[in-house]
Length: 177
Image 1 (tube, rainbow, N blue to C red):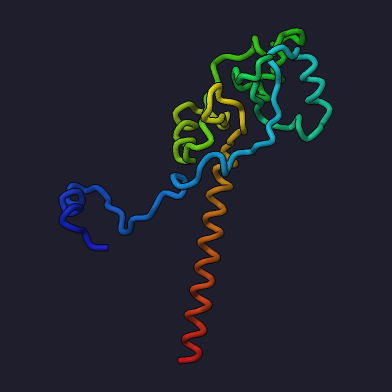
Image 2 (cartoon, helix red, strand yellow):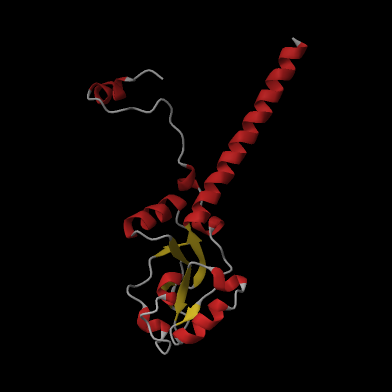
């Protein structure tokens, strides 16, 4: 696309101006549509030894890389990673709630995936706790980097399939013409 009067001055300064404008797909998808709603949580009162034993059981629920930690009232208090849980410097009698180093980084289910991705980058984390908009912001899911990539992959697949249909129609017209 040629530069317009609006973009010419920018281009002269050496800034690359996109040839086409397209919507940011991540801006269009709400977090609630992409997050995992089946969330395995840990309790602040859980003892590390019991959690380690559970993780060693090999069940599917015990294979995640991070777990939201909730208190007795159901409020999210933080997220703890598998690496922290398996760190041998922590004694088995330690409570999970005492191991939390920062408050949870959360995103609401009506936020966009773009906002969620920005939160992940800004906080250098790979998962976000998804909460509802209403007070007291109940836990509704968890969003991982993999969930973001899966949403992007769905868009690519849909675009690819849409392109295949167009090419098929074009080839049929050429045959008839």
